[in-house]
Image (cartoon, rainbow, N blue to C red; front, side, top):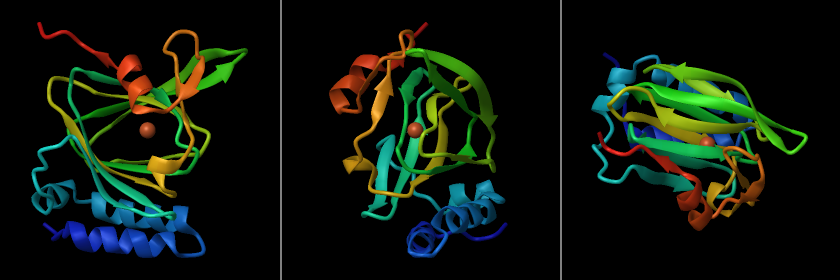
Length: 178
Ligand SMILES: [Fe+2]
C-alpha cells in the first residue's frame, strides 16, 4: 500500500491550481492518489462532520465529503470544473440538462472506490450514496466554491434557484428511516 498524507495532498492540489492547466494537473494528481483508495482512507482522519472544507481560496476549493445513505443532494451546478474522487462506498451521480425549462435526466454513473470523475462548469448533477452505507470522497473545485453564484434546480420543474443553505435544505430529499 502506498502512503497518503492528506495535508501534503492538499498542498499538491493547491500548487496544481496555480499551474497553466489546473483542471488537467488536478485530475492527474487525483487519478494517481485514488489509484490506492485504501491508502487515502488510512491517511485521512475520521471527520465528525459530513462536509469539511480542507482548503479554499480564489483558485481552488478542496472538500472532504461524506454522503449519508438516506440523503439525495438536489440537482445543482458548480460554475467551475469539479473533480471528484471516491475512496469508500458507492456514489451515484445523476446528470441533467435543462431543456425548455424542464430538467431532463441524461444519465448516471455509480462511482466506486478509486474512481475519479470530472464535471464541467455547466454540468448539473444530483448525488446520492448507493446502498446502506455512506460514500466518502474528496471533491476539488477550481474556484472559491462558497462565494460562487450557482444554482439549485427543482427536482421536477427544473426551475433554477440561487444555491443558498436555505434553498438546499428545502430541496434536499431525505428518505424516512424504515
Ligand atoms: Fe456537486
